[in-house]
Length: 603
Image (cartoon, rainbow, N blue to C red; front, side, top):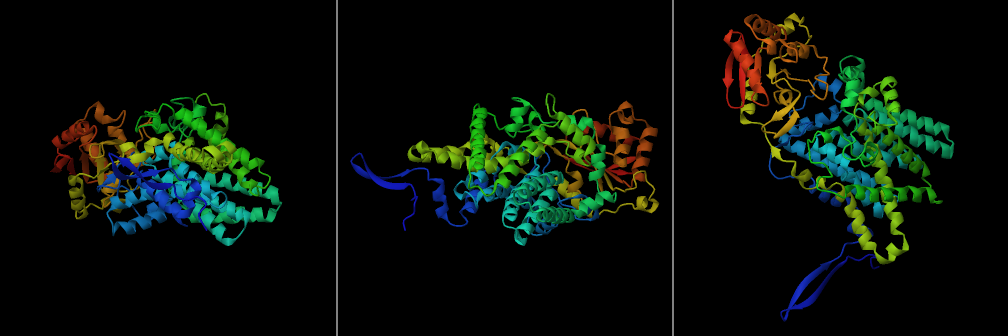
């Protein structure tokens, strides 16, 4: 049997200067011809697309604002009680014994975006496979994923990718209940929550919506309750490490949520620039990092991005209408659920931003829903809006392709436009995120010091007394005191990686956010001690005398600290001046000094 859509490659001869020449004429293949590439064609296609996103040449790390796993990963009790991704960290720790850690990080970024494509494809694979590729393409290329990736929030990207698999499994389970689908949806959504703990709210909303609409169709209350109870129980069970850790007072999530205030909500509010709040949010923009100009925005040198989004949104609406008008549609529970979730996600993504008519809803949730305050960055809800877009986008393209004038006259042109549209809306995803991703490494001086610290001896008197103000002990204090600062080797502002890099010793470095009106939201007692000297209103900027130097050193000793590390980055000079004064009074001495750092011994 001949294929219904043969490849559109033609080889023909033409005359040039009297000689016969071969030339190749190529036309864009139809979507359905991709089906002829084999059962796993989508894996190869999304793999190749991911190669267009990330540069794999050269060794070294991607140093981004919030990039995780650029330093050795802790796997001890504290990490177990705090890190939702603890089980993944065990895997990475094992890989770190075989491969360079920078390669593990590179693979993590690659897999996250690749899974977006495969997950988006899986949403529609069993319903409209020819257009499922478009759902996967949109899941990869969009402003939400771009902003989170370039900012280093790869955990949020992974959470979104796993949630796509969850929705596909949930739809299949509610349509044809069996244990296999139930296990999949539990594992995928549990994994999504591990990577982004705030996703627990997305889990609850999604399960209630899907199971609720399915109940309205089959009136099977027992099945609905069983689905909610079993899936909810096991999703929480797989995340019990950080949940129990916080209720036991060991984990930090509850502590962090308790410190979040109205200033945090305003600082991380969804942004209205460059259009307006409603259009910005609808088009998956509005991430608070965008107005800080930490990266090239998606609309850079793209004057028609608003027009492109309007075209895209019209196609999505076609998808919605085609699904609800289809009398043969047996999965309207899925369509209704995703439409409801899209509206909910849009409203909640707007947050409490100025001029938002729906702000009281979010404010009510902040004030009354337990732990919702932890979702101080409401634009994370836009990930659910993206899922709905991917779902209805594929159906919308299918509906438009059935128009007679397109089917008979412009099928290839329509295919080309639909394939190009997500990339045209987010061209900054291509080529190393618009050439903003580059590999670099820590200075050799950092590596050398880390090796010497491995064999250094440390005073354990803090543990013996166990009566320090903080109740914890540290070995090394790191200056400058900032949670985020610029590093020459990273060529941008990033989260201070010192505590992770020098993880072989107990390192105390800054956890002061210094964002907007917020200097710090930390309640760590030892941070308060350090900030009483170097923070705003601290004693050092007012004048450092011998008595103040002695008091500072005495506090360090109570914390167990016998070494102070000055990294020669950012505003290190003022810290160097303070330490020079303290050295003059004989309280510290220089043990090591080079172009990148100075190590002081506390005397």
